[in-house]
Amino acid sequence: MAANVNGNIGLSPYYLNTRRLESLALIEIPAVAQTSLNANSIERVTAMRYALSVANRLLQSGLIPNVARAYAETSNPTRFLASTWGTFSFKGSRLAFENQATGKAPCPATFTGVLNLGDREHNVHGELGNDHYYSQSSIGMLSGKRNLFILGMFEFSEEKVEIFPYMIGDLVDNLSPIINMSIRNSIRVYPDYIDSFDRLQNAPRANVGDVKALQAISEAEIKDAIAEIIGEPFVPADWGGEVSDLQTNRLIVGGAPQSAAFILKGPALKGEMHPKNMGKRGDQLVRAFGEPADLIVIQHCNKIANTVVKMAEALAIDPRNPKRFCILDGADTARLLKAYGKL
Image (cartoon, rainbow, N blue to C red; front, side, top):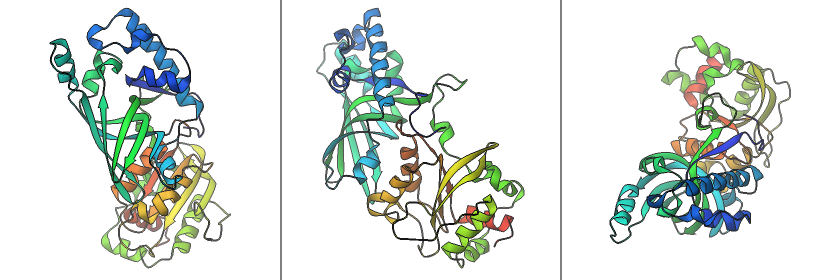
């Protein structure tokens, strides 16, 4: 997947608030798009398809930031337009349409979730209007727990975030031979799939002793070892303003060279790695995903928390600058170095 927006990423839509999209894109969308699915029609279907084209143009404009980036770069985040990818729980979609059809009092569907931003967990809440569901299948898709993309207005209040959604759906690779294939299926690269680490194919899993031995090696030694394994002769010296610790154009993935940026956390960081260990508000991770690299590798000599993985996934699934990422925890790092005789 190439860095920078290239028009290959599209939205597979479940929800489009056409009123909000109109005000954002300054493009008029037929008013019939703003009617409920309970009054669906050919005209509404056509208008919604047009609204989808507007939504895709907005995504490909590169103007909407990722929420993790916007949060890290704002000194006092209160309210801003952004996008995110995450796990959300949707409730009440079917009931909302049933109530409307039978003339009962309106009860909008809702969604909840958690955003891991820097060293904080934010509880997310939002509401869905019946006028903005894209199609009949959207009712089922916006029910239960789902991994989805949301673009909207994020309003922060202490540890809570209210999202006013403009669009909800999945991001798909328009060039994939598989129809509507989510880009989520291709953004994480596991160490065993990296050609430059081919000795991992037959390497046994690391044991407790291997991980303990790894924690006796300095971060600089680990960096030198990884650089030697991938054949990168230029190893930068450490300095305080670094975004990533090692950059290379020599990593081979899927038979082709890839540019990669490595974030390395040696044994000086004790225990499990969390976003708060990666700069204020996790900004080291945010800035790393802004580097001119196709693959971001996050390495630590111990366990890497799921919050780091989720944040990396959310940053990678960014329509403005899509990337891939790889997690190298202590067990993977020990196994890699041992396979190449460096542990």
